[in-house]
Structure formats: structure tokens, C-alpha cells
Image 1 (cartoon, rainbow, N blue to C red):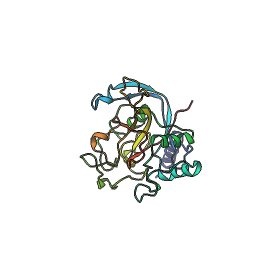
Image 2: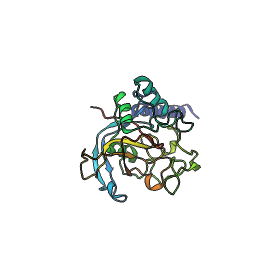
Image 3: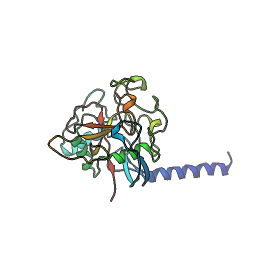
Image 4: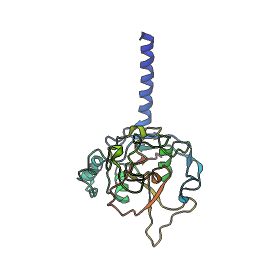
Length: 257
């Protein structure tokens, strides 16, 4: 390789590293940087799936940052140690409680308290979809149909785990790099369902707090989800007080001012 060719490679590498430095902020959670999602138009909703995903429309999104991975057991334990908040239900479990795996066994309020402690928030459904779908409305963060390289998913028939992707239950939060979104966010589909900030309601209506307990929305599917649930648009209404789920976790966002 000539000297000029070498300098060309070095220059490209420097530009790439600089771009990555701009795109990701170390953030307040050790080992889980915040990834920049730029402002701009994006597709939200779907006309092809369940009724509660409709209508598909183009929205103008604001810039925000989102954790690169789900919050891990190690990160959640640091929050518990710092605040005295209750531990995750599966803390210490031989498979679900592993340090680098996503924390599971947390209620909506537990997840909300974690994010707030770090000056962050749970993502809205629109923020989740923008991060997961990109701007063109993809069914998957990586674009094409899923394979075992892309996602930690369940069996074809709901709802049991499938170790064919290498993991009988949760996978490490840094696993499945081939399934990253365009901005480099990992496991937005599969591994664990993720709490959002939103109350559940049809898109055309507003959720109201009535005598009946309002549900919150989970997104993304998990390690025991069948293909129907493993899309960027599937919405699961869930009891916010339930903290015994072995397949539900979360990540946080920062929306700026």
C-alpha cells in the first residue's frame, strides 16, 4: 500500500470515528451510551397488521437520544444500591439474572423510577417506533426478514422459547449486532418486551384514567415471541403493576429541551 493510500484509509477511519462520537453520548448510565436519533419525518403505525396499529401515517419527529441496549441486571442493581429501590423480581436467577443480560421482572413504575433517577424517561411509542423502524417504516430494525443472526426470538407457535438462536431465554444486551437499527441501537425487536411511557389506547383516541386500571404499552417482542409479535409496530397492552414477567424489560430516552 502506498503512502497516499495509507493516509486515505487513516482519513476515512478518523471521519468514521468522529461520526460515531457525535452519534453516541456516554450518558448517565455506565456502559449504556445514549444514541442520537435525529429529527425529521418518519412512518408511524401500520395498515397491514392488527387494528390497533392503524392508521399508518407520516409524522414529524423531534430529535432524541435512546439507550443503545436494554437496561441490564448490572445497571439496575447499581440503581437499587444507590436508591434503596426494590430489586428486580428475577435478581440472582441463574439465567435471567446474569449481569450483562437485560433486567426482567420489573413493573412499569420500577422502570419509570430507574429512568427518572438518571434524568431520563421511558420512550413514547412514537420514539420507540422511530428508533426501531428508521424513517421509511421498516418492519424490522435491520430491514429484511429476521434470521437467527438478527434476533433472540421464540418458537414459530406462541409462546415458548427457542434455543436455535443460541439462547434459551434472554441473550446478553450486546448480542445480535446484525440486528441493530440504522443508528446502531440493539435489540429493539426480540430479547425482551420494552415498557413505553404511553397509556394504551387506539391511535385515534386518547387514553383516559378511569375506574378501571389503565394499561401501559409494551413494544418489541421477546425471547419467547412468535413471528406475529416480532415487528416494530406490534402493540401489547399490559398491566403496569405486574412485575413477574420473565420477558419484560426497558430502556430510557432523553428528549432534550
